[in-house]
Length: 340
Ligand code: KG4
Ligand code: ZN
Image 1 (tube, rainbow, N blue to C red):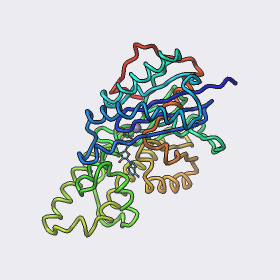
Image 2: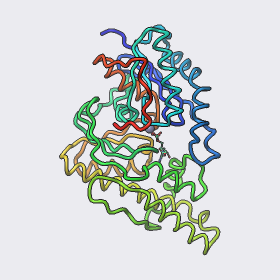
Image 3: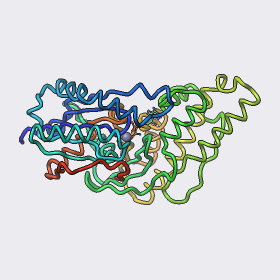
Image 4: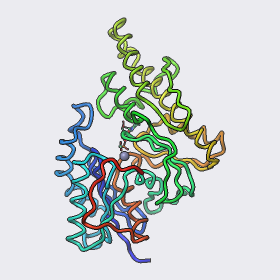
């Protein structure tokens, strides 16, 4: 086989990332996180775009260096076309277009959500862990998206359930903010939840019949719960932080598992996977392991480094497109609201 080197670029939200894939094997995957958003409690689009502009060249340089290859060896350059923040997507798209032109190589636009699914296939040299077999179901849970995807092929993915309001990651982050945790709150809730009792407090779950999710009711109920308890005891959060986090996390996981189970029953598919930033959650990982053993399903969980936004996953889809010669022209533009 020829040596195919894909340079992937990911700039959909607040992580600037570049990766090099060699014949489908990951050589490097460099991500610069943007600390600037922490003090605002969420991503500020203008600041994200500016930070991408500052980070993109050094991040790409480092990805090439770590992969041990030069710019001229790259076979194609790929970037996240959407969904994401327009100002952020533009930085990656412009860089990739320039890189393709300057090096006279194909340009490939990639759907960010398909990328999260492709993260399940990312392997470094020597890692022989089995990849999922088509068709499989993916619970795609991130800060911007929560959906159940029926994955028929790399180019054929069907959304069979999705959130009608907030994403699961958003629920983690917004509730974390209510109890004074800094952005992104998901990993902190995970940390405190490990030390708490998941049954200490009860939160209501949405009643939606199909495979769709809803998290805004939980967020509102959580806000009132905290407000009411602080009125009685100003030290409520400090005294109960672990139990609050454990109970909130337990409820979010129950909502996710309930719908995933329904999807398994409806489709009869025996392989399941989890992807997206929230799949880093240790409680969710544990629950899915137990669930898949009980139901005799094959479970795929991406390595921690590939769960949150990274360019390796973008290069992963691009490699498949490269093999099919699905290239884009310089006319391609970002699609902030793209669906899978
Ligand atoms: O996929 P991602 O990096 O970006 C989006 O495309 O949204 O996901 C980021 C989301 C954030 O909401 C963050 O709080 C959440 O993933 N997250 C977690 C954990 N690690 C990241 N949520 C819960 N537990 C975690 N350990
Ligand atoms: Zn993402």
